[in-house]
Amino acid sequence: MDLTYGSDVMVALLQRLGIRYVAANPGASFRGLHDSLTTSGSPEVISALHEGVAVAVAHGYAKASGEVMAAAVHNLVGLQQAVMATFNAYADHAPVLLLGGSGPADQARRRPWIDWVHTANQQGQAVRDVVKWDTEPTSVAALPDLMLRAHQLAVAQPPGPTYVALDALMQESPAPAVDLGDWGPAPLAPPTAPLDRLEAVADLLVAAESPVVLADFVGRSRAGFDALRRLAESLAVPVVDLGSRHNFPTGHWADCTADRAGRLADADLVLALDCRDVRWATSQVDNDRRGYRMLTRPGTKLAVITLNDLKHNGFLDLEPPIRADEYLVADTAVALPVLADLVAERVARRADAVAARREWLTGHTAALRAAEGPPPESPHGGITEGVLAAATYDAVRDGPWQIGFTMFRGWPRRTWDLVDYNCHLGGSGAGGLGFGIGGSIGAALHHRDDDTVVVDLQPDGDLLYTPQALWTAAHHRLPLLAVVVNNRSYGADWLHQRRVVQTRGGDLDRARHGMDLTGPDVDHAGMARAQGVEAFTVVDRDALASTLTEAVKGVREGRPVLVDVVVDLPEV
Image (cartoon, rainbow, N blue to C red):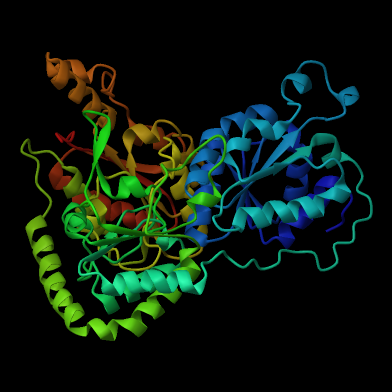
């Protein structure tokens, strides 16, 4: 590729960084970059109809692939559209390279009004609080150093988004001679804990009579995922999967996710691994009183391995401060395999206790699974969330699949065999609405050339924030099964309003005002068809299985399909 313009140099750097895709909603402030991308053909431009969708696609791709993806946003206005999606990526530890057109910085070259109102004195200030780093290169010669730093900080543990503002004139100006030589990213050593601190945690674990492990982001790495299972099996310790990633296999004899409260109540030691919020992980939230109560007993010991301390800033505290007996700031991808080895070396001294715990734990988890039983049917003859989750799994289970997103009250873990690494990508990170469909499209982009069906168990309210993302799935023919969990309401908020009415007294129907998505009902299938996505609507329980089977067949043939399933509104 000839490096004729500044934007050509930028594309060459993206290629050297291994960036395969740039999601973008077009904007005049990066027209130079857009042309260079189109001319080179690599990275491929993934077209999006909203900047929030573009960032969500990059976020989902990063989780599915483990690689950085870029998203381009237009000047100050596009950047502000993208802030919520960027916040999700920041909280979810997702490496996204955010590229923004800006300027011109040279005020003498600005067009009246439009260039002035769309250019901030510091462009990155609009997003600075929710990225790891931002910069505004002032010359083409500065690009290699600054792009290298942007990439390094995006992937450095804990990963997250970085932002580079590219001046419009710099993009379109002739490029000086730039010798890239062997320029490219260097491998980074992740942070880990000193051996003596890991030995101290291992000693606590082996000495404990009733330890429990809480895991949240451990499944970001295969090394952490595998080491957690090894630790659980050697020590016979119950594991609770908190779900920011898929951390531990369902059906395993040590999986006590369904009994978090019981295991914490009995615990004399809690090991919290990569938790988004340790207090949340060890307590029961009281939504009625906006409070919480601890599930652990006084005197229960606590060991923490986390990276959260590396992301606290003046804008945001990710969690409240925690006092722990051992508190290690380390990457579980590196620290947990070492910890598992240290425990394995020590466990022989407690062989009888571990054997007894394994026998009890095996029986306990079997009883938990038996008590759950099949998902309940609707008393009204409709479709419940649990029935929908189970039916979706039945439709996809005979071939490769991956859950791209869900906010489904735990039903996938109860009804799916979640065994393999990265089979479930978790949620949005910060709980910002509108992520689900875009994030799942990013996962489907990663699987575009294989037979994997990416399943988006998509809440209807979340979909209505970014429905235009469906066009991207159709345009790029991505293997996405979007199952709309359509309770025709903002169900989570309805539960909150119901609590308020119950506390204050009055007619419970009052809680539905402003919560119901009816009158008219939203035609999600029609909205999908209008954007080129094959779509079905299911209201009849008897039609559910056959419709999902037909939808999965279409996805495996290489096209996105949406199934809008009307479900009962949960009563709890």
